[in-house]
Length: 190
Image 1 (cartoon, one colour):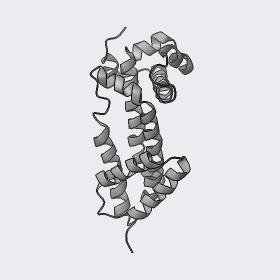
Image 2: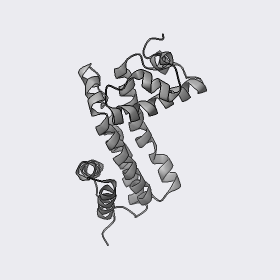
Image 3: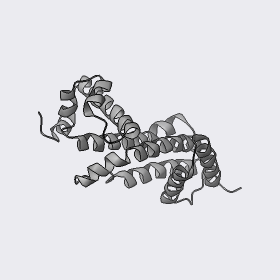
Image 4: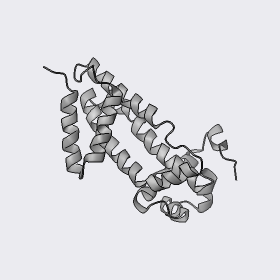
């Protein structure tokens, strides 16, 4: 078995990358829906790989949880450029907000598993605030430059508002309505 961290030093083959990505996708869903006690065997089986492949990528349960959470964060934050390329900035932000609610739901579902990572000395959230603030800032700046969003909104305030929506809403429909209200508040005053 490779020592932890060696994988990052050399690029993975395409099939190994697909296996790793599939493991992360399945793990995030499993830890979110089934809790921290889901077996690693079950995750490997659902991903279509052997347990040895799982352990080759993630030597411990905590390493898998940490990587699954960071993968969800990266998926959300890294989507900004594609959204801005494919949509006007205000629509890109609104679409990103929907993705943010999904990310927060997954994070809440993974909370017990993430607490176990923290208890073992890990810090899965070390990059979260910076990455999320950068993503929101990029979307707000693009919207302001296009005249579609206010230029006086602090990214931290928009992020806090988004977090509040995810915590306060009791159903996806309500979250969507609250996000529409938030978007109305982000539009320039006329």
